[in-house]
Image 1 (cartoon, rainbow, N blue to C red):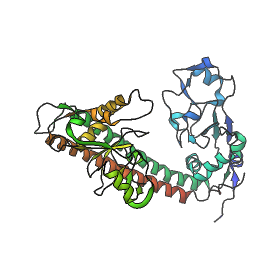
Image 2 (tube, helix red, strand yellow; image 1 turned 30 degrees about the horizontal axis):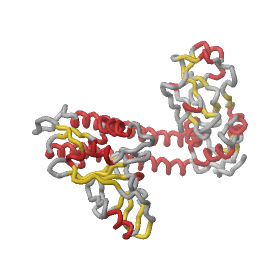
Image 3 (cartoon, one colour; image 1 turned 30 degrees about the vertical axis):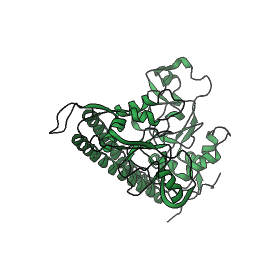
Image 4 (cartoon, one colour; image 1 turned 90 degrees about the horizontal axis):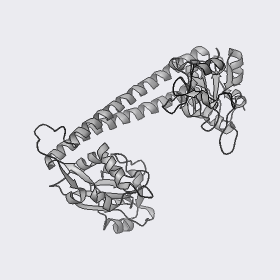
Length: 410
């Protein structure tokens, strides 16, 4: 079997009748020619990893511009790059996007007959190619890309027939991933709607009646306490040390958990004795307001960025309060509690004053079970999605293994 030789994108375009064009510079497109209607203008902001991302903020131009500057009109299967910033991102123009307009911060590659466009999308998403583009881009404060750099991009491609076969296999994997993402989004929307109805008392579980009563968390809790305000020395034992980075949106993030010595742990735990099933709430930082149930049956220590809440079992359920804090009503109340703070922070006083509408304890537990089951199903789908993405990544590595080394021809 003939082994393909390393060549360049420019050579492949020349061989197959393709071309590269940069978007219009300077005053070629006047400010008055942008409009709220018409076709989207594609610049770096609209270019994602493999696809165009059109939003309400995407500028547009009308038919007069398209007619006057037809050389910048995009065709199906064109590949577009951004000239500045995230230069390692590229996207293929779909059939439904033919006629979009190339913006001044865009570069269009029309592939010709020597390169299959679907295959090329995946080549350009590979680590080797993206690294090469970043390494060879110009500029110190902001990466810049131009036609000359792209033309020198080293490639080592199989026959066009094999390119098409590989592109189809990877596209089918992407379709499966997209279908699962849509399923997850649908189940999340259904769960959110169900949660709002149940937690507002507009819908009741079978067998339950009566009014919901609003209670401050301090009135239904045995203890609300945050972790240590002094950073202990890390390591030296197996006692887990939980910080805000470990508290996700309804789930614990335990990929990386720090540990501390037993002596350090004892000093913290004597004040902050969190137990299995307590509700953990992030007090400050980027994850402020995130909450999850403590899954550890052994003793753990908390940093001050995390507080725990333990309910009076006759009055409230930690799992029910968690579901309320994850609801749109709960998120809004947390946002309001943080209003006016110079930095993102929830104080213990603010947590104690949060108000939760509550049915009786038996209904709380039943509601938490129903909504928790929905969460479990969604988490299982997310795990399946991660596995599918990993499988696709492995497929890309195997099928695109003829790409030159990232230090290849320049």
